[in-house]
Each structure stands twice: as C-alpha cells, then as structure tokens.
Length: 195
Image (tube, rainbow, N blue to C red; front, side):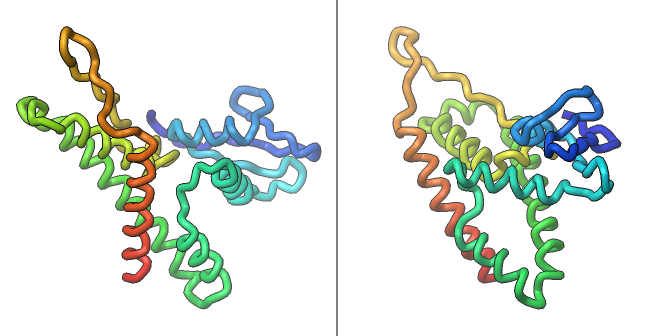
C-alpha cells in the first residue's frame, strides 16, 4: 500500500460528476473513500474554476459514513469541533488533531510490529486468541479508513481447533465486543479532551 508521490487528481464537472484523471472514468464518493483507504492521497478540484474541493468532499464522505451508523466520531468530539469554529482556539485544533492522528498511526504500526514479533508460545496461553481478536477489532474501530495511511493491516486470526478438528466459535458475540470497544473509546476520548 505505497502512497504515490503525486495525489490522485479528481476533477468535478459542472454536472457535479467526479472524473478520475488517472483512469479516465467517472467515480463516486465511495470510490474516492476506497482510494483513500488504500493509502492514496486524493485532490479534488473544480474543472472550471480550479478551486480545491478536497476538504468539502472528505467531509461529505465522513458525513455519509456517520449517517449510515458507522460512528467513529463521538458526539462530544463533534460538539467540541463545532465549538472550535466559534472560538479563538480554532487555530490550535487542526495542529492538535493532525498530531493526535499521527501518534495514533505510529502506535498502531508499533503495536502490530510487536504483536507480529511475539514468540509463538504465548499463543498457547488460554484466552490469548480471544484477547488478540479483541485488540484487532479495537484497532479497526479506532483506525477505520486510516489504517491504509501507514503501518501494516491487522492479519486475520486463524481459527483454533476444537474437539475432533472442529473450529471453535468466539465465546462472545462480535457486536457485543464492538459495543464495548466503542464505549471504551468514547471514555478515552473524553479523558483526552479534558487534558
């Protein structure tokens, strides 16, 4: 998932259709989101005026994901963002957010490297596979589309063998795990906001 040096140029026509100049075809917002998840930088410009519309379309992609229930941004964070537009601290917020996400990407990358270099005997500890699955789900929930930016993708965990070679099912329902992870993430973000 190497990022190319020049961003992928998308031109918006007067009809509001988006044109991929690299492949000479029309694309949707979901296509653009997929390019970004794959680690590509994207630049969207208005064909006639040359205005950079990238920010506007990225916000639209986020809004669509949030409206479909794929909530990554807690209400408290959204509220604080709205407040930052009306306060004198709005000049600090972009740098803080950029630094926070960069630290998160670096932490994810280091964690995945450390997990990959762990000696195999720890995998025999009871409950280790479930704990590792939960950590990977947490990272996926935290990183969402950002995982393509840097660091390795989490590998799928092999199923552990049960009796007579049958695969065991996870003890806890994945949706319950995700709900718990989102709750913990929201609490963590509240603590960070207080700092």
